[in-house]
Length: 276
Ligand SMILES: O=C(O)CCC(=O)C(=O)O
Ligand SMILES: [Fe+2]
Image 1: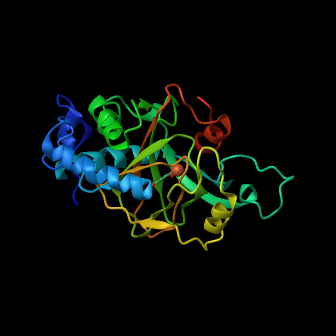
Image 2: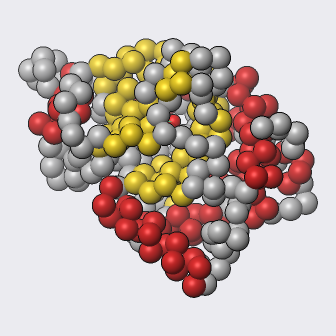
């Protein structure tokens, strides 16, 4: 697709212009069309812990966000290393084959929230209350809050040939990812829904995922313009290795059920090279 739109397209308008409001009238959550959409979205969340909203952006909105993401991508900070599923330093007193001691490759470029200009369409979509209210209506978990992390609240993740993101749990309740540009090959989002809960780590099930022998893993290929709402704190997930010259671009919009939630300093240092 030819990306000719620029961020200034939104200069006098609202992020509503980006959204396919005919299909998803998120400005009127009580409309019958939206009720119908919310019904299937909630059913997906209930059965898989994730919900795909295809064609969330309209074609012009997608062009605008692609142009925004392509202009921001060169400012991404790249990190490459190995991490655990728990985004934590492993406890070496645990047995060697314990899930907390399993390392996977994390190679990704990230544009942190504070690097987005205020005029960025992606940023304006994230900061737009109707967007958050829509996500809250899908999740039905009380009022949502934007993540309080000055770096992690909104990210543009850019992944190139050879990049991947290891199996991990997120530090926020929900992440909403917006697929912007697909890689030539790979870059699928794989998830084992609700593999752990707040009071049970289910290490045996997690180990099966890490060892590639779990039958709970669902693979969600990414389609630009699709919104994916997933419960990443309890659903282990990864991004499969990317192949080819086209970068995979994804917007990551973080929300939490508690106000004031931030990621750990360790994660911020690893991802952004700084804590604030
Ligand atoms: O890029 C994606 O689709 C997901 C990224 C992710 O899981 C994360 O940043 O925590
Ligand atoms: Fe994640």
